[in-house]
Structures are given as structure tokens and as C-alpha cells.
Length: 116
Image 1: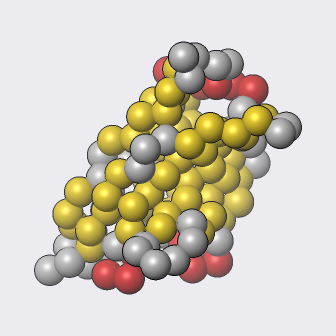
Image 2 (image 1 turned 90 degrees about the vertical axis):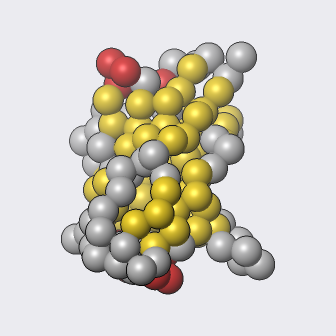
């Protein structure tokens, strides 16, 4: 059974940091591109960052460059999204996604709230 389980969201003050994680099971994690998306009510999901299978290449949306990183640990089947200097407008549900060719799996999402 394929599962992606996010954890590590929560409430943080503006300028703070969070590091949600995504634990995968039921498929060969190291052969999948991992991505993180975010979604606010009434809007579509926005791609935030991606990392290639071996972790040797990453991509970020412009608004998070220099503040977010997307490490992965293939030995532990886990993807992370390290978020620093968070802004209130980045309040959203954050989702991880695993993709290999035409096959894709989503996690259930974790809420991140940036507020004082």
C-alpha cells in the first residue's frame, strides 16, 4: 500500500522556521522525484520545490529561493522541506508528492500557519 505521510507543520511566528517531513512507504522511494506543493483555500496547488531521485538537483519557485531547501534521505524514505524566514502569506496546507514517469502519489497535507 502506497503512503506518503506528512508531519511537522504547525504555528510559527513571521520570520520563524519549520521543517515538515514526508515519510514514504509502499514504493521504491529512491526512484521518485519528490516535490512539495502548497495550497490556500480557493486557489490551486502551487509547486514550491522539487528534488531529483539522487538528491543531486533541486528546483525552487522564485519566491522561496534562498529561504527554503528540500533535502531528502533515501535511506529513511523521507523528504523534507526546510522553511526559513517564513512570511504570513505562506500560510497554507503543504503537500508532498512523489513522481516517477506518469505515476504520482500525494500525501494528505500538513497545515502551516505563519502568524504572530
